[in-house]
Amino acid sequence: MVYFLVDEIKNNGILGLVYNYDKFMHNMQRFGMDYFNEFQKRLDDSPKGYYLDIMPCGRFICIIQQTKSKSETFMLLSDTNNKYENAENLSTYLLKYPNGEEYQKLFLNTFKEMESDYENLYNEVEMTLESLPLN
Image (cartoon, rainbow, N blue to C red; front, side, top):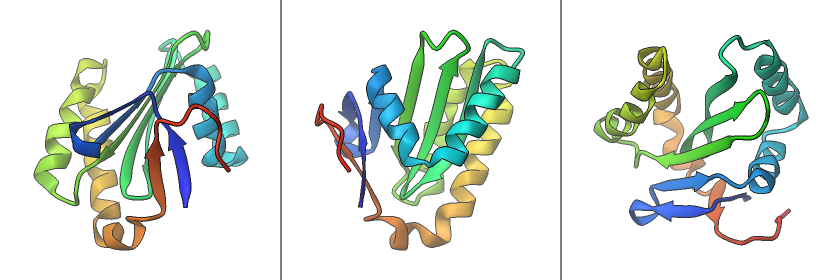
């Protein structure tokens, strides 16, 4: 099992929020160096001043955002409970961004890609409020 460090767990464990830079970096390392390096490259190349990515993470859909200055980091882990209507509701958060409809579509497509494997992935990743990095 892989543990992701979060600052807050909300909605009975459906949402995990990460604001702390050290926790953010701990979690980014869990995705692997290839992903981390690709994320940093896209961040550097982004004309927006930030980069946002959406990817599957066990049973969670993960929204990852960082500013170019690296002064602001944010990660949201969301468990849809494998229900499309939950994915739709959670994806509305992305509408606040420029091109938010594209991000929302990516979130919903990620849900569809994970949907058939949800039960198999359920126990692969867990969120924790622990402050020390876990292996």
